[in-house]
Image (cartoon, rainbow, N blue to C red; front, side, top):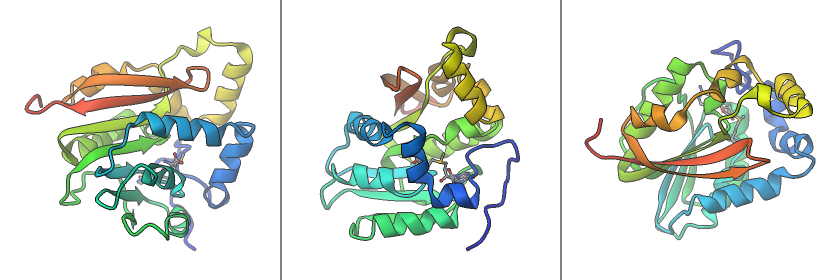
Length: 223
Ligand SMILES: C[S@@+](CC[C@H](N)C(=O)[O-])C[C@H]1O[C@@H](n2cnc3c(N)ncnc32)[C@H](O)[C@@H]1O
Protein backbone atom coordinates (compact mmCIF):
# COMPACT_ATOMS: atom_id res chain seq x y z
CA UNK A 1 0.00 0.00 0.00
CA UNK A 2 1.55 3.33 -1.03
CA UNK A 3 2.23 6.10 1.52
CA UNK A 4 0.12 9.27 1.20
CA UNK A 5 2.20 12.00 -0.40
CA UNK A 6 1.59 15.40 1.20
CA UNK A 7 0.84 17.98 -1.49
CA UNK A 8 0.25 20.64 1.17
CA UNK A 9 2.54 20.08 4.17
CA UNK A 10 0.37 22.27 6.46
CA UNK A 11 -2.83 20.40 5.64
CA UNK A 12 -4.49 18.12 8.17
CA UNK A 13 -6.75 16.35 5.70
CA UNK A 14 -3.95 14.57 3.85
CA UNK A 15 -4.07 11.78 6.36
CA UNK A 16 -1.24 9.55 7.54
CA UNK A 17 -1.39 5.85 6.74
CA UNK A 18 -2.52 5.16 10.33
CA UNK A 19 -5.26 7.83 10.32
CA UNK A 20 -6.63 6.82 6.93
CA UNK A 21 -6.60 3.12 7.87
CA UNK A 22 -8.58 3.79 11.08
CA UNK A 23 -10.43 6.99 10.07
CA UNK A 24 -13.99 5.98 10.95
CA UNK A 25 -12.99 4.54 14.34
CA UNK A 26 -10.91 7.63 15.14
CA UNK A 27 -13.90 9.91 14.36
CA UNK A 28 -16.13 7.83 16.64
CA UNK A 29 -13.62 8.03 19.48
CA UNK A 30 -12.81 11.74 18.99
CA UNK A 31 -16.51 12.63 19.22
CA UNK A 32 -17.21 10.25 22.14
CA UNK A 33 -19.48 8.17 19.93
CA UNK A 34 -21.51 11.12 18.63
CA UNK A 35 -20.24 10.91 15.03
CA UNK A 36 -22.55 8.19 13.83
CA UNK A 37 -25.77 9.96 14.87
CA UNK A 38 -24.47 13.32 13.69
CA UNK A 39 -23.51 12.16 10.20
CA UNK A 40 -26.86 10.39 9.74
CA UNK A 41 -28.73 13.59 10.68
CA UNK A 42 -26.53 15.71 8.43
CA UNK A 43 -26.99 13.44 5.42
CA UNK A 44 -30.75 13.33 5.99
CA UNK A 45 -30.77 17.14 5.66
CA UNK A 46 -29.24 16.96 2.17
CA UNK A 47 -32.72 15.82 1.06
CA UNK A 48 -31.43 13.33 -1.50
CA UNK A 49 -33.97 12.39 -4.17
CA UNK A 50 -34.24 8.73 -5.32
CA UNK A 51 -32.86 9.41 -8.81
CA UNK A 52 -30.08 11.80 -7.76
CA UNK A 53 -26.59 11.52 -9.15
CA UNK A 54 -24.07 12.54 -6.48
CA UNK A 55 -20.38 13.36 -6.71
CA UNK A 56 -18.60 13.00 -3.34
CA UNK A 57 -15.32 14.97 -3.29
CA UNK A 58 -12.70 13.60 -0.90
CA UNK A 59 -15.08 10.74 -0.12
CA UNK A 60 -12.94 8.90 2.43
CA UNK A 61 -13.97 5.41 3.55
CA UNK A 62 -17.40 5.35 1.90
CA UNK A 63 -19.21 5.74 5.23
CA UNK A 64 -21.04 8.80 3.85
CA UNK A 65 -21.71 7.16 0.48
CA UNK A 66 -23.35 4.18 2.23
CA UNK A 67 -25.61 6.55 4.18
CA UNK A 68 -26.46 8.55 1.06
CA UNK A 69 -27.17 5.36 -0.88
CA UNK A 70 -30.11 4.59 1.46
CA UNK A 71 -32.05 7.45 -0.15
CA UNK A 72 -31.41 6.37 -3.76
CA UNK A 73 -33.40 4.14 -6.06
CA UNK A 74 -31.67 2.06 -8.74
CA UNK A 75 -31.77 5.16 -10.98
CA UNK A 76 -29.53 7.23 -8.73
CA UNK A 77 -25.80 6.83 -8.38
CA UNK A 78 -22.81 8.04 -6.38
CA UNK A 79 -19.24 8.58 -7.53
CA UNK A 80 -16.64 9.08 -4.82
CA UNK A 81 -13.28 10.69 -5.55
CA UNK A 82 -10.34 10.51 -3.18
CA UNK A 83 -6.61 10.81 -3.56
CA UNK A 84 -5.91 8.01 -1.07
CA UNK A 85 -5.50 4.40 -2.10
CA UNK A 86 -6.11 3.33 1.52
CA UNK A 87 -9.41 5.21 1.63
CA UNK A 88 -10.30 3.80 -1.79
CA UNK A 89 -9.88 0.23 -0.58
CA UNK A 90 -12.19 0.87 2.39
CA UNK A 91 -14.69 2.68 0.15
CA UNK A 92 -14.81 -0.25 -2.26
CA UNK A 93 -15.18 -2.77 0.61
CA UNK A 94 -17.89 -0.74 2.37
CA UNK A 95 -19.89 -0.09 -0.80
CA UNK A 96 -19.26 -3.44 -2.49
CA UNK A 97 -22.94 -4.45 -2.39
CA UNK A 98 -24.07 -1.27 -4.18
CA UNK A 99 -23.63 -1.49 -7.98
CA UNK A 100 -24.58 2.19 -8.36
CA UNK A 101 -21.74 3.46 -6.12
CA UNK A 102 -18.24 3.73 -7.54
CA UNK A 103 -14.86 5.00 -6.42
CA UNK A 104 -12.16 6.69 -8.44
CA UNK A 105 -8.73 7.47 -7.08
CA UNK A 106 -8.58 11.08 -8.21
CA UNK A 107 -7.28 14.46 -7.05
CA UNK A 108 -9.89 17.16 -6.50
CA UNK A 109 -7.58 20.13 -5.93
CA UNK A 110 -6.72 20.76 -9.58
CA UNK A 111 -9.12 21.30 -12.50
CA UNK A 112 -10.63 18.06 -13.83
CA UNK A 113 -13.44 16.97 -16.10
CA UNK A 114 -15.35 13.74 -15.44
CA UNK A 115 -17.47 14.34 -18.57
CA UNK A 116 -20.64 14.03 -16.47
CA UNK A 117 -22.74 16.49 -14.49
CA UNK A 118 -24.46 15.66 -11.19
CA UNK A 119 -27.55 16.68 -9.22
CA UNK A 120 -25.47 17.12 -6.11
CA UNK A 121 -21.81 17.60 -5.32
CA UNK A 122 -21.07 16.73 -1.70
CA UNK A 123 -17.89 17.56 0.20
CA UNK A 124 -17.50 16.63 3.86
CA UNK A 125 -14.67 17.84 6.11
CA UNK A 126 -12.32 18.45 3.21
CA UNK A 127 -12.60 22.12 2.15
CA UNK A 128 -11.25 23.56 5.42
CA UNK A 129 -8.01 21.63 5.00
CA UNK A 130 -6.71 23.46 1.93
CA UNK A 131 -5.19 26.90 1.28
CA UNK A 132 -7.78 29.40 -0.01
CA UNK A 133 -6.59 29.37 -3.65
CA UNK A 134 -6.92 25.57 -3.69
CA UNK A 135 -10.42 25.78 -2.15
CA UNK A 136 -11.34 28.03 -5.08
CA UNK A 137 -10.18 25.38 -7.57
CA UNK A 138 -12.33 22.81 -5.74
CA UNK A 139 -15.38 25.11 -5.79
CA UNK A 140 -14.83 25.61 -9.51
CA UNK A 141 -14.67 21.83 -10.03
CA UNK A 142 -17.93 21.47 -8.07
CA UNK A 143 -19.63 24.18 -10.14
CA UNK A 144 -18.61 22.66 -13.47
CA UNK A 145 -19.78 19.19 -12.42
CA UNK A 146 -23.27 20.30 -11.37
CA UNK A 147 -26.37 20.15 -13.54
CA UNK A 148 -28.04 23.54 -14.13
CA UNK A 149 -30.25 23.26 -11.02
CA UNK A 150 -27.78 21.20 -9.02
CA UNK A 151 -26.70 21.76 -5.42
CA UNK A 152 -23.29 22.01 -3.82
CA UNK A 153 -23.54 20.53 -0.30
CA UNK A 154 -20.69 21.46 2.01
CA UNK A 155 -20.50 19.73 5.38
CA UNK A 156 -17.71 21.36 7.35
CA UNK A 157 -16.98 23.83 10.13
CA UNK A 158 -19.37 26.73 10.37
CA UNK A 159 -18.24 30.34 10.66
CA UNK A 160 -17.20 31.32 14.18
CA UNK A 161 -14.73 33.48 16.05
CA UNK A 162 -12.28 31.37 18.06
CA UNK A 163 -11.88 34.18 20.60
CA UNK A 164 -15.59 34.04 21.45
CA UNK A 165 -16.01 30.33 22.12
CA UNK A 166 -15.53 28.54 25.47
CA UNK A 167 -11.94 27.91 26.51
CA UNK A 168 -12.17 24.10 26.28
CA UNK A 169 -13.61 24.19 22.75
CA UNK A 170 -10.91 26.65 21.67
CA UNK A 171 -8.25 24.41 23.22
CA UNK A 172 -9.51 21.32 21.37
CA UNK A 173 -9.80 23.18 18.03
CA UNK A 174 -6.22 24.46 18.39
CA UNK A 175 -4.95 20.98 19.27
CA UNK A 176 -6.66 19.05 16.48
CA UNK A 177 -6.88 21.47 13.57
CA UNK A 178 -4.39 22.37 10.87
CA UNK A 179 -3.31 25.88 9.92
CA UNK A 180 -5.83 26.25 7.10
CA UNK A 181 -8.89 25.56 9.27
CA UNK A 182 -8.21 28.75 11.24
CA UNK A 183 -8.93 31.03 8.30
CA UNK A 184 -11.73 28.78 6.97
CA UNK A 185 -13.91 29.49 10.03
CA UNK A 186 -13.47 33.25 9.62
CA UNK A 187 -14.68 33.45 6.03
CA UNK A 188 -18.14 34.42 4.79
CA UNK A 189 -18.76 31.34 2.66
CA UNK A 190 -22.08 32.45 1.24
CA UNK A 191 -20.45 35.60 -0.09
CA UNK A 192 -17.53 33.63 -1.53
CA UNK A 193 -19.82 31.05 -3.16
CA UNK A 194 -22.01 33.83 -4.60
CA UNK A 195 -18.94 34.96 -6.55
CA UNK A 196 -18.71 31.48 -8.08
CA UNK A 197 -22.27 31.35 -9.39
CA UNK A 198 -24.03 29.87 -6.37
CA UNK A 199 -27.12 31.16 -4.57
CA UNK A 200 -30.38 29.96 -2.91
CA UNK A 201 -28.47 29.05 0.24
CA UNK A 202 -29.84 26.97 3.07
CA UNK A 203 -28.04 25.72 6.15
CA UNK A 204 -28.34 23.30 9.06
CA UNK A 205 -26.14 23.33 12.14
CA UNK A 206 -24.76 20.45 14.19
CA UNK A 207 -22.32 19.79 17.04
CA UNK A 208 -23.15 22.89 19.11
CA UNK A 209 -23.28 24.91 15.86
CA UNK A 210 -19.55 24.36 15.15
CA UNK A 211 -20.48 22.29 12.09
CA UNK A 212 -22.75 23.31 9.25
CA UNK A 213 -24.30 21.72 6.20
CA UNK A 214 -24.37 24.57 3.70
CA UNK A 215 -26.41 23.89 0.59
CA UNK A 216 -25.71 26.21 -2.32
CA UNK A 217 -27.77 26.09 -5.49
CA UNK A 218 -26.14 26.52 -8.88
CA UNK A 219 -27.56 29.74 -10.25
CA UNK A 220 -27.43 29.43 -14.01
CA UNK A 221 -25.79 32.08 -16.15
CA UNK A 222 -24.65 34.06 -13.14
CA UNK A 223 -20.99 33.16 -13.62
C1 LIG B 1 -10.93 14.49 6.81
S1 LIG B 1 -11.09 13.25 5.58
C2 LIG B 1 -12.85 13.31 5.20
C3 LIG B 1 -13.33 12.08 4.52
C4 LIG B 1 -14.84 12.05 4.19
N1 LIG B 1 -15.21 13.14 3.32
C5 LIG B 1 -15.65 12.05 5.44
O1 LIG B 1 -16.35 13.03 5.72
O2 LIG B 1 -15.64 11.02 6.15
C6 LIG B 1 -10.37 14.08 4.17
C7 LIG B 1 -10.33 13.24 2.92
O3 LIG B 1 -9.84 14.04 1.85
C8 LIG B 1 -8.97 13.25 1.06
N2 LIG B 1 -8.07 14.14 0.29
C9 LIG B 1 -7.08 14.91 0.78
N3 LIG B 1 -6.50 15.62 -0.21
C10 LIG B 1 -7.14 15.26 -1.36
C11 LIG B 1 -6.98 15.65 -2.73
N4 LIG B 1 -6.06 16.52 -3.12
N5 LIG B 1 -7.80 15.09 -3.65
C12 LIG B 1 -8.76 14.18 -3.27
N6 LIG B 1 -8.95 13.78 -1.99
C13 LIG B 1 -8.15 14.32 -1.04
C14 LIG B 1 -8.26 12.39 2.09
O4 LIG B 1 -7.65 11.25 1.50
C15 LIG B 1 -9.40 12.04 3.03
O5 LIG B 1 -10.08 10.89 2.63
